[in-house]
Length: 460
Image (cartoon, rainbow, N blue to C red; front, side, top):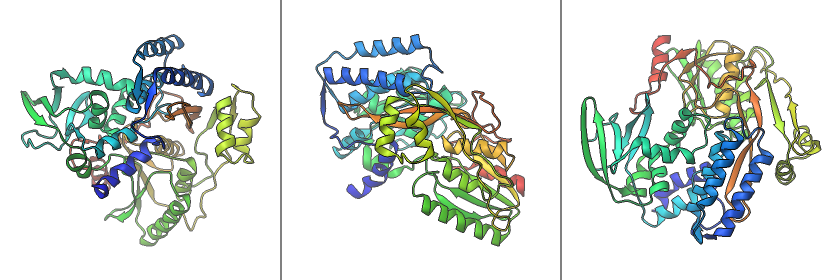
């Protein structure tokens, strides 16, 4: 069992910053209330603009309402995480969040837990069957899910949404796809062994009774994560294809791969280059800039500017974890608590002409192009370094981000907060994702690659 659980265990560590605390810990009512108050103060102190997407009154009302629900004497880690998520997600900011409770989920898996066996995709405001891991083969992929155990999907999602931090429903749905609906359903409803699922397939509505499946053997070992960007270079008849992987991790290894890839791309001599930023968790601008430098024809910046807010919490975090001799972090420390300020990065230089790719660049994006991958796509679009292909990103192109995280004192649960606002290169602050130059919808309900295949067909 250990070997089979490792792939998804590693992913959850990456997704949820699992703490060293034991998942079966219990917390008293007073400890939960203290952490709630602490979280509330942390958000007000450290967020660049906490009330940008929700009113102060609405946020406070939600906080007070959740506080009144903390009535019993003891709470486990899963219950505590759910309570705090409902507070922080009310900011409606995708980069201000508490992650899925991965530690408790893994403990549940090791205890022989079971799970709802159907993954979903959101298309045209409908919840569709994306993957069916049940033993009922009469459930067709692409069928619309109407209800589960006599509860409508609209009602179920109204309970899921408050756990998911996002600026809009489009991004909430994107995150639900990425986290996985069965995991979130377990978080809300706990272990259930039988499900009655109502489906609509065309004009036909039907009900199916399905059993839960073993979480490890029947679910996690059979699936692949949506956010699965991998370092890849391959060649098609008309184009080179490069997936740079997530824009994070070991930067030395990343740069070595990009260097080698462009050496080979230029040696093979294809006219077109396809860069794939889909299903990408994002990361850091230094990764994006290094990639872009291989096809940029002028010095460039990764954004027009970034506005930041210093705070007591951010200064403490900076002293603990960052290089305080660097100019960026010195700016944080010398500002007054609560002071906002403008920070500009120096232009990034392109690679020398003999190293760069000089053909036509196409960049693939979809709703699962998150954070820095969306910012990098916007950067390429605004400088006209390439043509953007696919569907609108879930994340906005100009967004509250530049996050840091802080542990709640009693539970140790990590809260992430956006300390700044990033404005895309062209200066637009419209509440939109990156809009492709060539729009090709990405249908997650099937195994077809509509975006890549559609572009290759155009190039042929």
